Image (tube, one colour):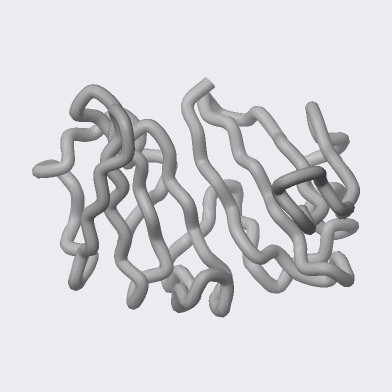
Length: 135
């Protein structure tokens, strides 16, 4: 089983088997993605700096099949996530952003030595993606 928060800081050769991996390099960052496992990693200076867990459908990724940090699930609404974790440290409502286009609602929580960002579906009834970052 993959614990996403435990991937932070790891070297790419220390990662568990994630099926077929696509690799892309942009500027000083490497992006490793497994569409079948619903996970994407950002590697900076040789170490995992961010983990993206997909709820299925977003950008063609399958649903991440393992445990989501803090015992959350992709099927939870924004209301349920907040009832479990309390008030977020930061949040935003969905809206149109200049140049970037439509951005979904999101919440950011800091817990247990990492930051968890939840990006919600348009109707706020589920989570499209969780991002795990170091503090």
